[in-house]
Amino acid sequence: MNFRIASTVGLSVGFVSLIITGLLMYFTEYDYLTAALHIWSSIAVLAFVVGHFYNNWTPYKYHLKRQVGKRTFLIVALGIIPVSGGLMAEITPFATIIELGEKLRSTSTVRDGKYQTIDLTTSHLGKSTVGLFIKAGAEYESNPQPLFWGMTYTATPQVAVWLESTQGKFIKTLYVTGKTATSDFYSVRPDEERVRRPETLPYWSHKRGVKAKDGLYSPELDSTAFDGMTSATPKGDHFLKLPVPDNHKYRVMVEVNRSYDFNDYYSRNRFPEDAIYSGSGSSGQPSLIYQAVLDTNESAEQLLTLIGHGHHSGQNGKLYQDVSKITSAKKIVDFIVASLSKS
Image 1: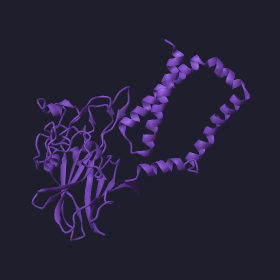
Image 2 (image 1 turned 180 degrees about the horizontal axis):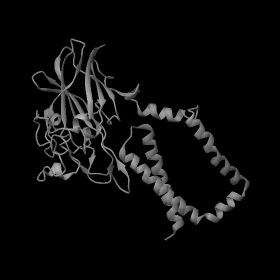
Image 3 (image 1 turned 45 degrees about the vertical axis):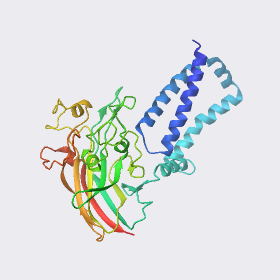
Image 4 (image 1 turned 45 degrees about the horizontal axis):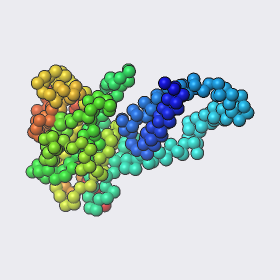
């Protein structure tokens, strides 16, 4: 095998992958798969660079002995110092490129104080909007879960917000987190097969009443039905600004669920015959459902109340009002406040 050819070709492929994933990370919100591919591309490039140096060490030493080689090496090596200093001090133009990337990634999500604002009302023609402030609780993020090679990751909640009539009839979805909207779930790692997770937000999905091709009520894989109503799960406290119909009294419903939140009752081996609960190894306490009744003719703020939970493996769309066996899941969010406003 010609290692010089292999290292050169491998280096070029890895470099192209670094460019593509780097641009995606610069222009778009964080995505696990993109970040993982970027890391693995970096590892591959590093390995091929070592091979490239091994095969070209003699000409490389010759280049370093020449004046242009020495000058280039010094400029690049010493150039790291002012760039690092400029970034730490947030001096233009060093920090400008980072700030631009942050602005591009936050086209629909902006930081407002210490919480994130997600505004989905830009194309709304009506006058009424509802704001939901979701205060992250102590259990908002899971404990670190093992990945591979000593690496870990944490899970954050999946959330759906929708409207119902005061009689409980589904009206429309207002917001749903990205993974649920496209069924973008994996057993553990993104190099494994994608899995369907009907246990994630079963009350909302059954209320919505749209059955997928596989018979589940969760959104189809890569569904586009919720374009304009989604975002990646915020990292902490956040404020959702959502469009609602004018001149209506309705229920604002929120369903919240997070993986790996096992407790004494909802333990890993609680339902051994349940293929969904026991199969993925990540189901824990079931989703929690919160509710507030609002009237768009009255500007008001209301604290959403916990009214029950969904089925632990998403087998149905029932509301289970007994939450006595729910423990830490009640701390995923501290509280949710709904506020109405008119333009």
